[in-house]
Image 1 (tube, helix red, strand yellow):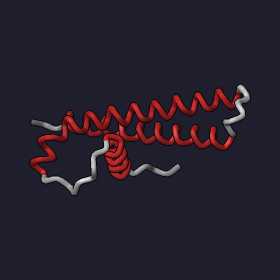
Image 2 (cartoon, helix red, strand yellow):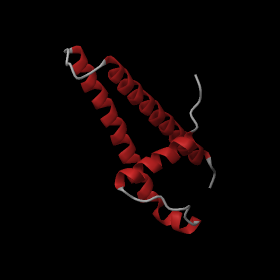
Image 3 (cartoon, rainbow, N blue to C red):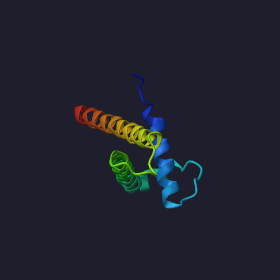
Image 4 (tube, rainbow, N blue to C red):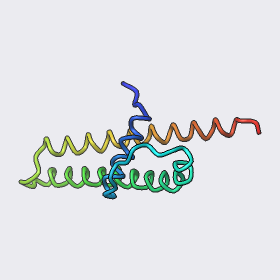
Length: 112
């Protein structure tokens, strides 16, 4: 089992969120500007990503049910592909969650 590069996954999630909102990709912001808007943007991006993963899982489930019922317009490869995409997206989201929990625990261990 290979590990997932969370930085690359986060970058892909940000890109997907920006594309979903129709926001053109801008060059990297300065640190001050990024810090001022990162809280709201991260929250929005995370919520959208979770909703997208949920949507993918529901779509995969609906396709599986349609295939099991014998729907003529749903093929096995489509069902398997949708299921694998949903599974991979969920695994990626779990990895992001694990890294966030790890970062939170590290912050809590810091002495002030």
